[in-house]
Image (cartoon, rainbow, N blue to C red; front, side):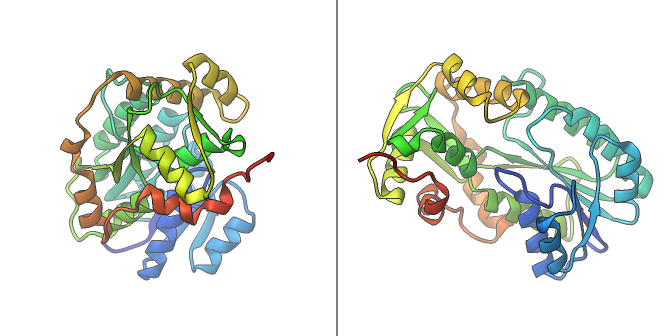
Length: 302
């Protein structure tokens, strides 16, 4: 792979921050990076300090994307869990095709089918088809629930010693992955000598029961944590004050799927894929909690 890589979402959002980490990894390898951000702020200055070219772009403005893509050979596409994915996909696909892009790696979700259980997963399927039709060497990184998603979920109530979620009993299995591991795989694919168009890579770092998640929280935070199952409706209403309606609709259905469907996630062979393409064994949730201890709310009360 030669030429400049356009990294979208480079400033980093509130969850996995894969775009920011991909930028860091590519710059460590000396790869020229054009980092797309929404606004010029301290995060943009940090990207400049890495040697990245920082540009302001709007996924939903075609002319903006045309300017951002002009002159690059490779794209990392990561659209947040919010409304507008298909519009953003079409804008990027057409602009990338016209600019002569020969490789695009998009970060999507583990399940991608026309009848997938959540609206976002169904949109992911359509998005992938558009990128492949564009003939720009699209390949797909299929990530499951980020460790960072569980941190956000736990942070809503953990100050009172409770991990509240609509997961049913504590034997429910949740497939997880570290945002950093997803970024490592993406960086590997963006710089690989050869990358088959239409290929996909399913990333699961760990399979943990809810009980094991709670145990990791207790050990990492050094305090007692109790799991409390709640209804889908209760969770959705509480979450609506923190995240957008599109994300609430997606996650509500996703949590229900984990609770009600038994899937053999081992068939995805995720840990081996992460180690091969990302260059190291997958991070563990227990290590993540210990490292991120200060980013969890402190305990309240006695």
